[in-house]
Image (cartoon, rainbow over all chains, first blue to last red; front, side, top):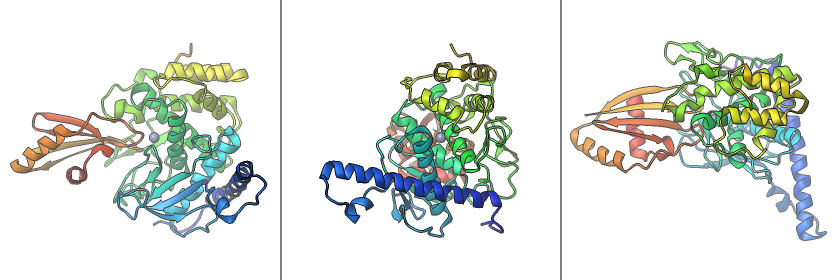
Length: 332
Length: 78
Ligand SMILES: [Zn+2]
């Protein structure tokens, strides 16, 4: 792999994640301690009881498709030296920490569920997904795509599919599907910017930055700031995302263009986050999280979600309403 | 006969298409296999496959593809 040097921002990211990771482990140990005491009276904690409270586990599919694969890293273990394993561990720990610290959410189910992640899935696999039980990451094809664990926003995106499944349960097709996709990008980008300690205004708003290998004409998979501009490559084609309701793509591909039309609510979030100010996670992200968990239905469309965000925005209601207007969506 | 494959979706949302030639015996069995695939069940970030064999076109998620069909589809996409 192309690792000639480690840029400063990456070192910073790793440091930030280590801190978040330790804080999270401490939180979970305390929480487990509390629960244990509640159920077992004043008995002291055993080592086994503490070990069973693991918030995440990384497994290795060893290029097969059997899940979850061999357990390779748990909290408290040192880095393994395998890039995909360590990126998945750090990214999942950081995503759990963001959900706990910013949104007061205890894992994807809000009940402290273990997060299972499998790396090295299949061969030449250009994808990552949440299968309803666990997260799965491919290594890419080694030509156009590198590891899907490399951009931390991919980790945040996938864990957020689990959060959405357990909250609004947005149906994965058409507008509700594009919203489901967008919400994963929203909290994926919020995680990335939080680790980079960037404000919404400073950030580049790129999803999947660094996933393309040398030779691909593109900087990332998606741009939330300027949908449709992330890549334009002779082999891969041009980024097909749209960023305005007037360009909404009606198609039967990709469950109704969920990765294409998600550019519309993605850009609304960019506009809202920069208007609200501060960090994406703690500014507009809190509004989007409140809307997601406000009891909206599984078939919520863009306008319905816009309304839910305006309703959740408090003093920022005008900023949020304008953000949606900026992409051609009217909140009622 | 030809099996035409269009793959859409996945995290990256980048589409790919390809074709693989199958002989008539395989084609007959393949037709039955395609007919037996259930209705498309959309799942987050899973690839969506549109498979066309002769007059028949079916759409399914990657999680719905049996292993041997998946191998054929991978060959079509090269
Ligand atoms: Zn997704």
